[in-house]
Length: 505
Image 1 (tube, one colour):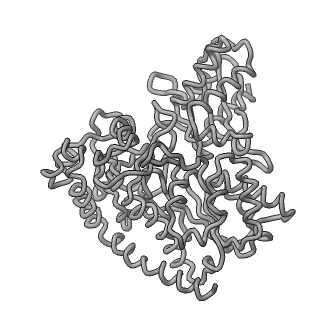
Image 2 (cartoon, rainbow, N blue to C red):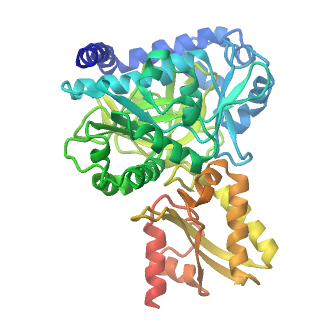
Image 3 (cartoon, one colour):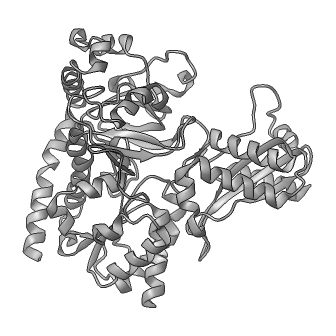
């Protein structure tokens, strides 16, 4: 296996020269991809609508094609889901990545073309390994297997030609044979729907393997790790997998989990690598082992634009090209892709931490949200849940805020709410249950994390005294029309601040 490991490491490192090329000539690479995308789609229905044949410059493209979101592309995507082709992209679209987070839908379906699979998602996976092999030339990763925590949805068939699942499930289902050989557990377990049984099966199937790397969302990785330690009676993961050397994570902020991982994997040599891989595309990889910023990957069939956060509310906001961005400013990402997303605002916000090469860090979403565990609860989800809870308990809400409760010891995470009522609910516990139940109904990712309290527990709700939020805003010198209580936050700053004030009064 050592010989095979050396061969794989050598192959992976060969790609580094191409990565260095787009780092050196970022604008040329982006321009080349812009023309490739426009030329490829000129005979699609979308390309004919906006006369892509006559578009010669990025300026013409920006003037002609409006900024899009899921709701504006939804009519086209629905037709594709029904089997129509050559709508947004010329090659046949047979796969859709299912995720949640839109205002009007419980789930959204992102088209995944053959090109976006090969040139974006799989290329990103290979580059992640290339970067790791380059940074750790003495790695032994390929002497064992990679434990991959698959998606929470099975791959489902929409019709004869169309399939969907969450992104990780779609990727696992399409992996090349050689990658499947190095992955554990097998597909029948990795794509199981029932997460409680799945975690048990994954633990049972992997404890006898020589696991050298783990890939997955921190939330579920911790749940699995606890199962493994419970099954084996070991104190940490290195007692189970002594050759474990790499953990690849993404989707949520890793900072709150770092200490727990140090306890689970007590080794200074453990390598943590963050990736930025969404349903819409693979965008970034942490390329330096001494920095948490991520290299923006520029040759994956994605053309990037960036809208300054102060312009987000504008009717037709001006989007900047890569060469126009500045350091440490918040931008909403806009992408055009080889999966048929055109000038699509994905909802994430980033800052550039370096302009040569272009490195980024994720700063949040364009709207308030909680996504500490991959649940992506947005304001609209919260409003629907609170409205239903009020209707069923006769309550009226004056103000509220919510934030995450992070994992602690053996306890799962959760959401902590502070709600000030104008009219108290006739049954406070019922109010919480209805709110929780409605959140599960309107948000499939929240529902998956709430299953059997495995990653998210029932919400913790504080019934705040009258004028709590008024007094808090006043103490912050933020009374007035422009200042509002942050409804949802992906951190505990506001929740802790208000709870401290309530305790003191």
